[in-house]
Image (cartoon, rainbow, N blue to C red; front, side, top):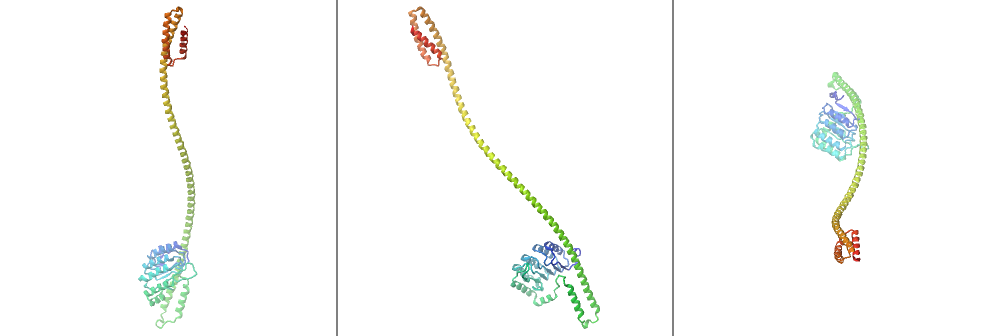
Length: 403
């Protein structure tokens, strides 16, 4: 509603409205359009440094602002520094209330620097009841803790720039505070004072001028009532927007909590899966170690088998060689056996013939034959001749010797 008719709003009083930082940001966006606002009072509205920064960003583009009331907002020394930076570049502001804003010596020093160095502050701006109000109030939340010497230094700096006479004139001519509460009583007192004062001789009969002034006062009253109605409507609209924003924020927070719960569940599942995989990995590593041990054992056994096989092959080769030697000896023995068998047959035949004839010559020849046979037998006995051949030879020799 304020954006719809910005040219109608010159004084805006939002004291003790819960606009907080979000509402301060909306006011900053509105001030950036350079409306003809002259007084802005946002005391005790829950504004912090974040909201103040957004507000001053838009206020830098507003050339008509003369009065700013920030009492009761926890802006602290950081907010005082922001205000000092803003005042250094702003030449229009004349009144600034900072009571109970949690400002300490550091923040006040920054404001003192502005008062000393910036020529735009040469206009009458006082400390108490005037332009820059930093008065300490004990026993209230967010009270300022500014040493008296700093307050005195700020006041002295302002006095050096403006002069005592100019400051006194400024205090008399300063505009009313932005708050509209209590204006009805002031207007009534003004009307009573005008009516009670006798008209000076120079203006007797100037009823038209008096009527015009009364009409002006009535017009100002109507304008004030219209502004109050618009401000109330704006507040109602802002409150509705704020409730909608809070509802949306609550929904987002619920979604965020659900997302966090889902993330926690997924994280737990992932951790369980990782733990299971790590357990499987350890089991697999143990099995691989066991298999490697079995493989080394099998390789050792295979090496032993290879050694035994080589030994067996060598033994087999030796046995084959020995078998060939025995086969050769057996073949030689069979040849000798055949030869001896023929000799035995011959001797047996001759022996039989000698028995029949009993001729001495035959016996003599058989004697020589028997000697040769014995010699041959002794040579052949060294060979592996079968036992039956040896027995037959022995029998034949015994019979020969008998004869």
